[in-house]
Image 1 (cartoon, rainbow, N blue to C red):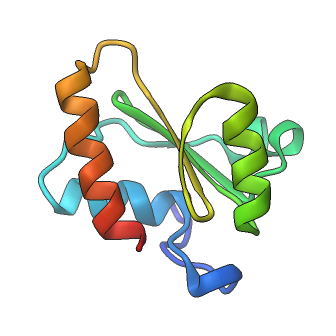
Image 2 (tube, rainbow, N blue to C red):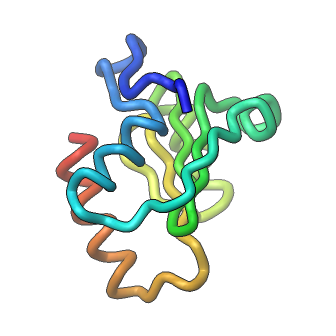
Length: 106
């Protein structure tokens, strides 16, 4: 996958690919990453979308866009990043991912 890890947008934030790569580097499971930007971003308004077996991560150009997308779907959102967890992940695992995402994104 030739997507970039950071982008020049608001806050110089991590892209969806950057978040997935950072999770994997921190020892979290994020196998089988697939860039779904072309399929998902036209409808969602995101700049990049990456799906793995454990998470679906979207990066948006602004925090407001990420907030609007996440709120309408009850998804986890930090700044310009929105994360949807795979159904098999336990609540305990989701909490671990959320805590790591707080560190990575902020």
